[in-house]
Length: 71
Figure 1 (tube, rainbow, N blue to C red):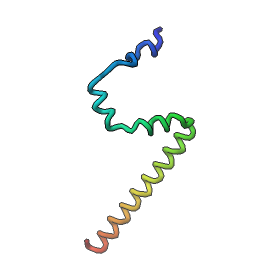
Figure 2: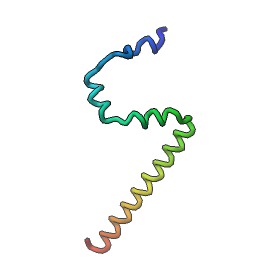
Figure 3: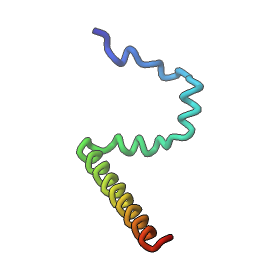
Figure 4: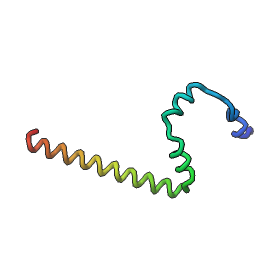
């Protein structure tokens, strides 16, 4: 069985497609998240999902209010 590390591209490998995508990715956030424990990442995700649900609920209520006001 081969070591997965042996299958990685060399550090100096240049892929133009990857370079195009990398310009739009904030790698500082990726590095920051990688310093967190798995539990901390789950907590962060849970917090994010709570905010998503709150925003969805606020949007639903807003649409209902508009509909009942006839706008």
